[in-house]
Image 1: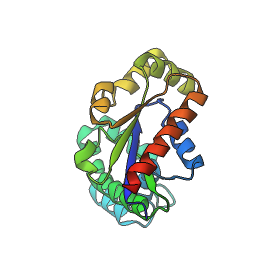
Image 2: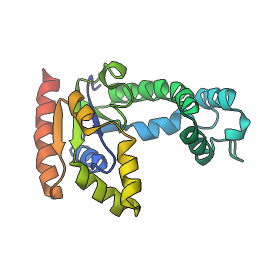
Image 3: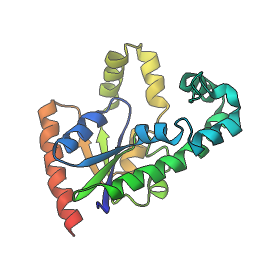
Length: 203
């Protein structure tokens, strides 16, 4: 049972997945907020029933699951709708992540939470012992988004601007990995943090 939980966060294209993969390779369990968000509104779930009660049956696809594309269009066009959806999904995601981390074997567990800063930070996740930020300069982030998603600089800028600022993420972080170099530099940083978290978890 891993009572020691570390939240991993970072902006778009910062390299969070590369970091969590390296922790997994060291035997650390990773609970993923994106997967938890899907589970929270899967077909037949109480979460999906609440979404339908709030938005109507037109948010369902032909199989009775959530039509994610339709829902995404709706919440991007309407901030109130987005807040209503988040009020249904976010508490369930937090509960699922906490449960997965606390059930995980090993000295400690990781919760991968891309929107940790935007979702309330430490107040929303008081059970996280540490917050690890995967940080990258904005110009590197922009270049990566453009290459990864094949988008223009203007759209890349909008995607970055839609998230919390780099300063806001740094303000809640206990530990920072600066991921603007080669991937083998990541290996060293993750290995050092793994040793540190094991020592902290052991008390």
